[in-house]
Length: 77
Image 1 (spheres, one colour):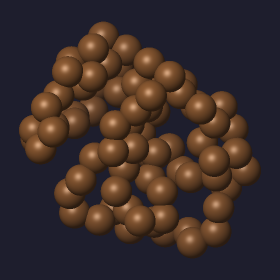
Image 2 (cartoon, helix red, strand yellow):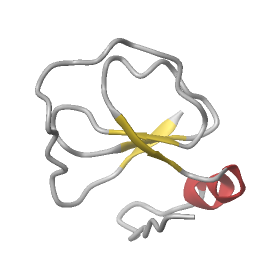
Image 3 (cartoon, helix red, strand yellow):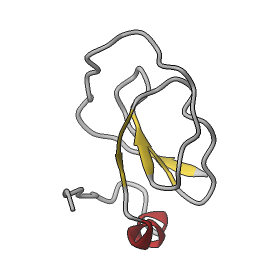
Image 4 (cartoon, helix red, strand yellow):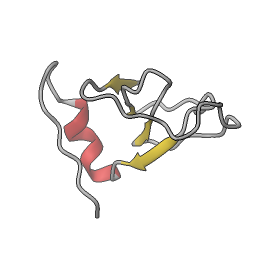
C-alpha cells in the first residue's frame, strides 16, 4: 500500500485536519506525527492529512524496492 518514512519531523503549519480527498499513486502525505507516508501501488484517501509532494510514477517501482533503513532523496522535477 505504502511506506512510512523516518527522519527529521516535518512540522505542519496547520494543526487542524483537511477535508479527505482522493490520493494518487506517489502522493507523499504528512500525518500529525511528522513522519511522511509515501503511497505506492495502492492509495487510499488522504484521511485529512496534507499531501506535500508526489513522486513521479516512473520512480515508484524504485521506491517500492527500497530496503528498511535505506536513505531516500527527493528532488524537484
